[in-house]
Length: 282
Image (cartoon, rainbow, N blue to C red):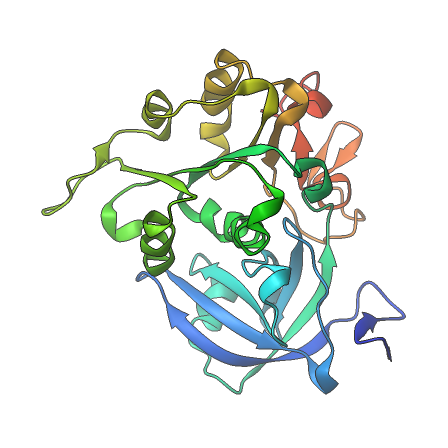
């Protein structure tokens, strides 16, 4: 492996680079944000929507979305990881200074250049805010390049909402329209109750100039799609992130294959126009 203009250049797609855990921040009892640095000042050089293969040596490896935006790299990058298995369980026990393995970045990012000048509506469910945060903060750091920004975000309970400090920051901004909902309210919750599609009645969109970005549990995608098509958003302007079933990250294992497409290589970002004829994609 060599260093070229602060970029990772590896002789193999399969050899992880050692990364050091710089900081760990708990968001909920299940989710933590891990801030990682690469050796010798190397930069990840990712784009919004990409992912890495994260490994805990001796335990396992898993694809993890990058939650930090390229505009806020500052020599490190962030991953939001849910404690959901053997590898992530061990990762959640690690401390700053511990070393993990990183391959990537992989995948096709969101085509940010195609979004320039467009109104953006984000429909996000649960852990989908992790990859969405990379896109949203990139947009906010280049705010003058985009039109209206609408964020719809839903979680199971108020306690499951992620990045609540940033949600409050976005809500205070005059150039962002934020709507939250939960499936099951708790004491003190005075916001919307219901699935994310119940938020669409609260927003107005200029459909022909709108790009929609949907991230979250696959079960919500079809219902969000119906709302967006009902508002007249063009099929080519409706984007999804398909992170399901990914494993190797480089299109070799076939675990994430959808017909002739590999989610890890051809995606994970797809427009509806690209996948609408593929049975089982939605």
